[in-house]
Length: 303
Image (tube, rainbow, N blue to C red; front, side, top):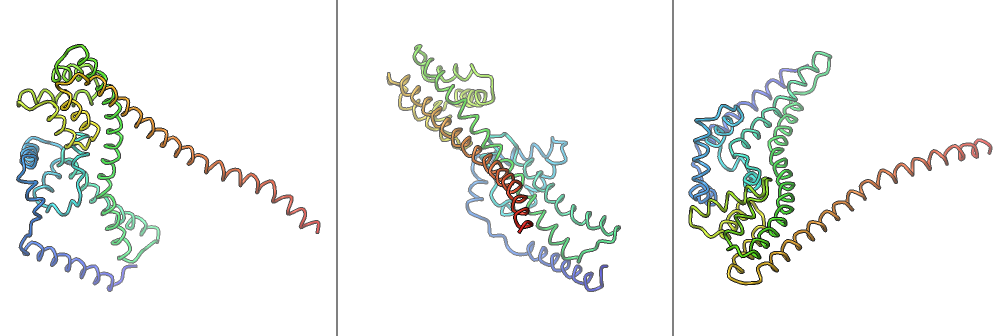
């Protein structure tokens, strides 16, 4: 049963939290120089423009919460945002922040609601226990979307590298057929129908209208999404744009990609096999115990 002391502690915590928030609003802001430069960069300007556009057009509650979080909360509260992973998955930043805030609020409410329900069956806890549990669960759920995005982006990068090997072969065949570098890259991107070919094709089309060299466009895309293999392909196209060994180098690059992916898959399969072997070994031990223990009991009983 809740005592007066626990109510006093709760009131003191709430009053202290309110005073801390008030002081936080009154303390002069010391902006992070890295964050300021990023906000003033072209990428930061595009992010703000997209946020403002989303604030006026979206009807999704999660996205509206994310827009509010971007405007009201300081950048340090988000810790380290997986911006490359979000760009790879094409998830808007305000939607990701909205998910984080909703998850955190859910974590704050789950344990108090559960404690209130348990109080009807006679189970009660000190007020500090559900409070600490709510804060811990809120922090965990606040960072859970970041982990989910990183896991999805890791799978997307594996898929990208798999398609990139086929794309390199297609570019090599187009160059062998006499196509120029840009034409070969654009025609190869039009062959595929999955998201990797579409993403590369969109970047090449954008570079044509902006007057940027196609390999420079792929360099920018690789840096934005964190794709070193695409960066290597752009280097090959830039260095061999006038050479006659482009077919050989591109084929060697695609074979290297496939060999690296085969090695990674083999390592992953071996690790999965080892994990599967542990339960089998445990079952063998249990089986031996079942066989040996009755015999031991008979021997000790006979003695």
